[in-house]
Image 1 (cartoon, rainbow, N blue to C red):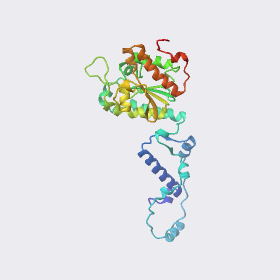
Image 2 (cartoon, one colour):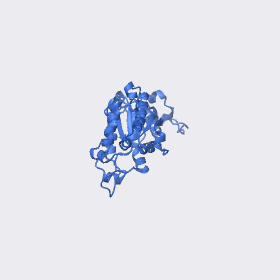
Image 3 (cartoon, helix red, strand yellow):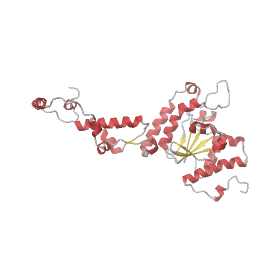
Amino acid sequence: MPGNRYDDGMSDSYQQLLDATIQHVEGLKARGVRHVSVAPETLRALAQPAPRIAAPPPEVRSRRREEAPAFQPPAATPPAQKISPSLLTSAATQISPPSAAAPLSSEAKIVAFAALRERALACVKCPNLAASRQNVVFGVGSIDAQLMFVGEAPGADEDEQGEPFVGKAGQLLTKIIQATGLSRADVYIANILKCRPDTPGQSAGNRKPTPEEMQTCIPYLHEQIDLIQPKVIVALGATAVEGLLGKTVGITKLRGHWQTYRGTPLMPTYHPAYLLRNQSLSEKRRVWEDMLAAMEKLGLPISEKQRNFFLKAS
């Protein structure tokens, strides 16, 4: 008979625990939770068959049916909701919102990041971009990075190589990173848009991504941030700042002033491409001051020589 615990081979306590776990997970999912931290021993336990109990002999089942009380309407609170927190915790569904998520193990983070990358590589949410791209430019660097750089979108060089910031602006960004004492391998670099904005009718050049394109693609960046959990994000350029913060007051006014994005301190600064166009010492110094602020926030050592970079007296 459907629903009979003996016929299903599943104990009442196990079924109640399963129901409560599913209910809890669905509730958290509705609140925006995307990542589940499960201990290795729990995974091994979940891989085991569900506990079964032997069905009683026919005469016992018959006697129980005769002795069963008349049907009673269910209580106002379902049994699953009465399960104690300790019982639910034993199911190891230790889930929390991204802002307070417990760090994943190295192995779990690698697996989650690989799965995210595969989804991004196969994305066709923007048909025009998917049709024109050479490569999806997912991101590069350490998935344990404390410092993360976010730009707006790949250019022609990035589209060709499948890696962000590899053109002239990317080479300058690498020099900026190295000036902090870090390397590209120490940080993580990504864009809001994972595909190069198409340029129909143009043989060269790039175009600014539309707000709609950035809105469509930014969930991938959100997952990258949630998995990496950097201590500082540096937003490169006005378009990236607009896509992340929704602010259009101008990068000149915003740069140098700390913002917060998904619970992480964010420093807006000029895009390296801007410094290629305007190589004045004063503009280079402004970007470097933003990087000094990021270094201080990260607790990185700063030498007197670094503090004096791009000062006229240096």
